[in-house]
Amino acid sequence: MRKYYLIFIGVCWLLALSGCQQKSSDAIDREESLTAKQLLQGIWVDAESETVTFKIKGDTVYYPDTTSIPAYFRIVDDTLMIGSTVTKYPIIKQAEHLFWFKSPNGEIIKLTRSTDAADSAAFEHRKLMQSPIINNKVVKRDTIVSFEGERYHCYIAINPTRSKVMKSELSADGVQVENAYYDNLIHISIFKGGTRIFSKNFVKQMYAQKVPAGFLNQAILSDMDYDKTDAQGFHFNATLCIPDAASCYMVSTTVSIKGTVSMELIEY
Image (cartoon, rainbow, N blue to C red; front, side):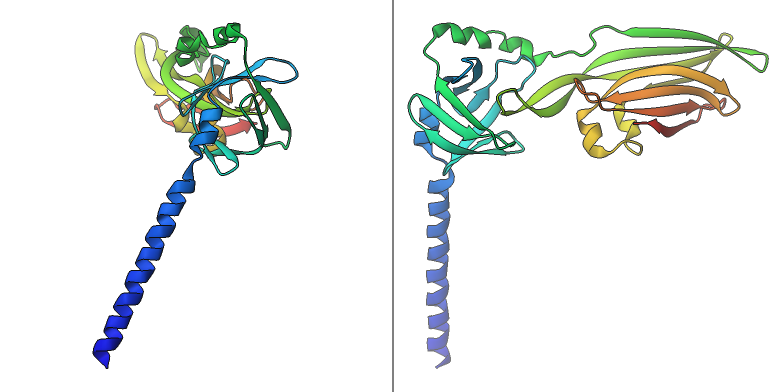
């Protein structure tokens, strides 16, 4: 009796496994609509303004904005999915020469396929996209400070780096795009007479305890200004901002006479 029971259990297990494999296979078949993807190939323009919205080539979306990063896309069922963070756009209508979808803010975006060869010129600057520099020059500042009968020289240098910061935002056409910016490295040196008593490079990650992570990920260390000198030390104000936005954090960065660094959030 036990023998037949074990055989019965084995058969059930095999049938269940077969069913799971079938479901998995079905899921793969439904994973992407290749027909819908093929229909989307080409340049698409806004139906009303006739401005170029994006270009589809293969499985990549290209934008005419020089700072917007090309993004991988796929179409699953009736949904357009764009980007590594996967922004979803319900498809309202799709045909050979039109494409309607709903943006994240609920607006229906109506596009038509471009028939104007001149529209391809909007993408000829793509090679420039890889260098969207916020500040391409080293900024240097010198401040002479007298404190308790001693003379100090504070030196600040703001250096652009090749470290990219990605910022997600909605384009004018309601499409989620990722823009690339370059972050800065800021160097502070303090001299007492001819002796250097402090020298350090500052990057935005050093302010992670003072600035929310979600903000910091899209922000750059944009500036550093000398503020004052008192018994606590030399005070500098670091500014961390999201590019092209009004949002900034200001963090007081204090260097003591002994060279220790402390930080305090003073403004948002």
